[in-house]
Amino acid sequence: MGPTPRGRGNAEWTKSISFWILVLANTFQGFGYFVPIVWLPSKLCHTLLKDERISKLIFYLAFASDLNLNSSTSSIALALLNCGSVIGRLATGYLSDKINPWFLGLSILASTSAATFILWGVLSYDLAGLLSFSLAYGILASGWTSTWNGFTKPLSRKYMYALIRWQYSNFVNSLNPLANDPNLSTTLFGVLLFSRGIGNIFSTPISSALTSLHSNSTTSSFTHTSNHLGFDVGGGKFEKMIVYVGMCFAGAALIALVGWVMDAAIRRRSFGRQEQQS
Image (cartoon, rainbow, N blue to C red):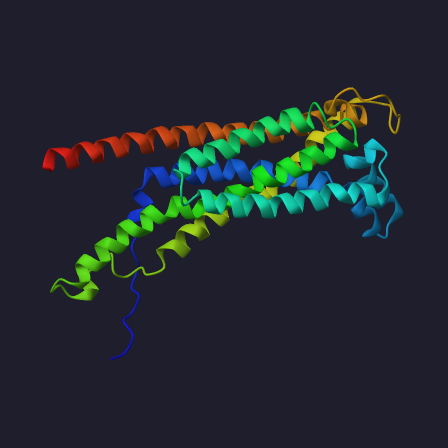
């Protein structure tokens, strides 16, 4: 017996309000997540570019170089960020099987926003503060994608149960709209990757524009002054960028809060129906 055609697939998941709230929060997270990864490691770009003028521009714009760090020292920030991302993704992946994904996602987004404002904006005026933020950001922000499985699993399980019920019935398989999409999880992950990719594309030009706004409004360049806050590094040219990143995560956390409240209401209604039936 030959393989069964896949058909047009099941589109019931497109009616899930909770999933589209997740997509919106995921998009906001993507707009903020990639900015520190681009701007923190700084001088590594200097060795990759042949044009001296371009190298000096990248060198000037990068955050770590304005702390007067050499190449080997500034690369530690990137190493800690990558190390933290491994820890964060493993830990979050484990917790996503134990904790409500909305609560976990809200905690990650809110903590990342707080870490951005406090560890980057306030304390990253020296090497210790920068390294602390790199490690914390890697652990917190990178764990977000590991929550996706916790979000998509209920949707996939819901339609899988429906698929099993249909398969054990006497209906023709081609008439079953739920039996024609065996790769629903892949579809959901694809939508999440697409929405996050939007932030990946546009976050760098947005952050560059925020930095250029400051450079155009000041006449002094390469003047080294004492930094009392992370906002003050580079004469304050990273201040708008730090605020932008923190607000992106704060906005994503607010959206996740809405999703958590909605999910709790749905669970209460479902529990109430089960009690009435029993």
